[in-house]
Length: 356
Image (cartoon, rainbow, N blue to C red; front, side):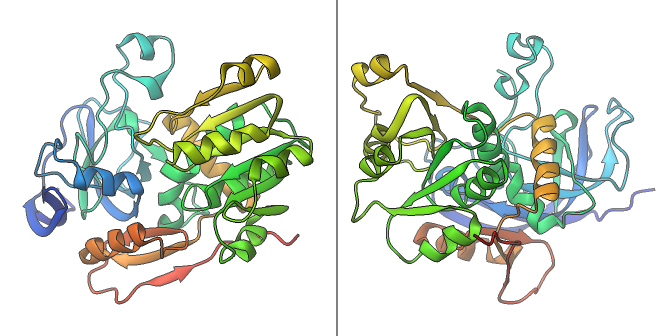
């Protein structure tokens, strides 16, 4: 017997920059899919890019930081997933298990997986279909509102830090203190790095120190690269911003053998002198979000280390307001939509912060 309604509310992107609240018929899952009743969905900068993209196939439901419960299972879904289980879905919509990348075990690089909120409907809705291969188990210790941003901002920064080559005690710089950066600061501190935050303006100085940075560099008044070099150079720079010129300037503060980890995706080429890379054997690498297994690692580490996103919740019907707050830079630091109708003006939840 079905335990879910015949229709559900969703916010759809119907034209570039336009959102509307609609009522849709609840779909049945295909053989390899599950149907989720959504509890929370994070609001990400990539959502805003999707919604404004004239090439996007519409109508489309945005959102890719999704946490909900399984209410229906496709016939081919394996027994690991059960009705009522709380799960998450991130930006990567489920690997195919057949392409060359999947056969090599690089599931996050699958050539045939949908992009949630872009090529497949996402989580600005009360219900959502998802490929079973995209599912992430959510720890009981995390509420859905805090778990949702970890499925994108959390796993992206967690994986970048794990891949950056730095070891405990090394100097690691985080550039850009927003939705991604505020998670990177917490993870980096708890991984044992000496953490330097690079931002613009003094208004966030107290926040970044509470989140775990040992030092804040205001790049609007100080040369961040020179400051890093005076400290011996950074072994890794985690760049979460899309300003390629700002990244190029900051990476001059990398120590020999240091690595730039790029997370922000801008439209401008990154300018770097070959001699800077060759002379110091420095490296540049991109980092995607991660596989469901890696996302579960990030969630579990977040619980163990008490590294949680700072979130403000808004009800589903205020999705447009959430995106405006995101683009204005007013959000500190992640916005999360909840599916409870009439929840009100929203509330702010703060994680346990670090005492220096």
